[in-house]
Length: 88
Image 1 (cartoon, rainbow, N blue to C red):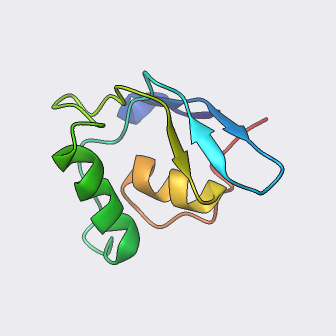
Image 2 (tube, rainbow, N blue to C red):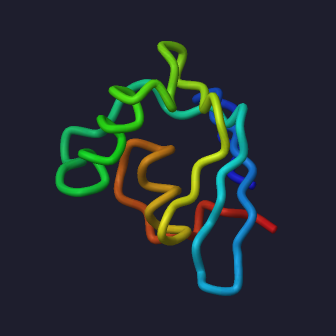
């Protein structure tokens, strides 16, 4: 679970045996990204918006599987993350 009450961020993810993490529908993502947030995770975030997987309120409209906890956390938080944002 990623929770950041000050930023209205809440996400639940389920990790599989391969290290992928499925973030469940209804997760709220940070609305803005950090200035230093670039590269493949930023592009993935843009793809989720373009494909309407992430709605205009930055809520995930269906479950989405990320390749790792760090990928999921980075895209959700709009900033590089090593995956330690996930709490058990």
